[in-house]
Length: 493
Image 1: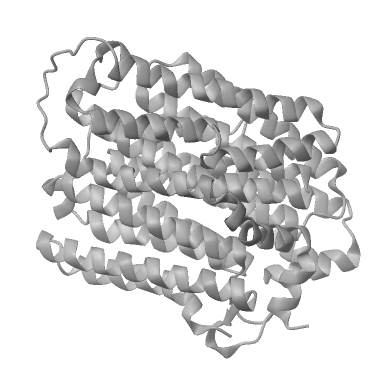
Image 2: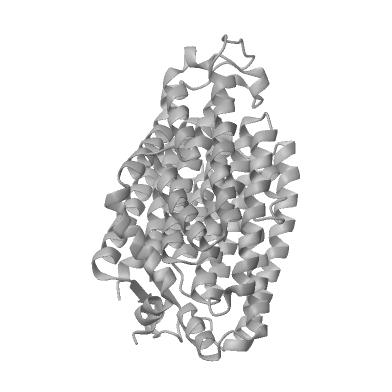
């Protein structure tokens, strides 16, 4: 048992509580936030190294042995996602210092920010299906506050819609867990998998699998349940938008990946076939939105939907190579979407508009911003040797080998449309004659550019280091494709 597995959960929890008592002392909040974020990154890095060297790490809370107590589990997938979340949170936090504004800072922005991270890290780490629901709710409650904080008309409108959708999905989540418990009699995820493997996958379990796909599909924004996402992610300020776009949907994607590889893998003809169809339609809808809009925020938001479809297509294919591709692409997308949303935030902040038709010539004033965006755009489009290439190649190759030529073709074709959509931003926003804007620059772009530039550099290194990282990613894929590894680590069999 590794007690340090709880640190990526405990650090944001304690930080959020402590920051509440310094709500009016902004410099102290910033200092505590930076120290805590660095500690969170270091603890997540330690866990990832420990998992790679020693195997899956577990912790039974209150010394109740699994499956009777609550278990935290850090396998390679979980450890990588927690590490990526911690790095992105640190980048968004540093960006917030210069952009979020004193009004939001004085109304508990930083405490709620850490409660959001608490929910995300907890969801990635828990080994208990009901506690996955609990951490979802922690994450969602924090996201409600971050979405409405500022009180603009669009924020209030989108918050109402966002809350209604998530309240319904949370109620469905509890019902799905109740049905699953009535069949298998346990909440421990490893034990659930063991029980289902003993009884096979009768019709009721397949129905529950579809129920979970509905629940997590709403939270992950798959077709046709994505309708809430474009408006809700459009409303908040840039660092919140980056956290939402990079991390929130990925918790839903992770939950589908975990349940569909650990629980519902015995009769894949219907469940994974349905997931495959929905993932393809998710890609198509995302691509249409990305190329149709002339708003920089909407273009990147719809690219979030495209990425969800690509990742889940790899999960639906359910080979070790396709799962490795999904893990590669999942981590890539978290990093690059955070970078792009932060870059878009700088553009909007210094032009006063998000319409590309009202912009032009920014490369003359902000060359560093322009070329950072260009590199991030290439990475998003999957141009080799950047971060988006390796994962998509593995997913497409697995699809072709599985005989799903249409699906693999759509995934491959989506790269061209994704690249077109972000190049449309680059050409229209940065090239051409400089324009005069009503809103003057409030913060020098170089201060805001540091965080997304570092994330973009990570994306470049992630792509260049594909060969070195492949053994780590393949370890995560092996655990997903072979549930016995996870079960034996948790139940000590």
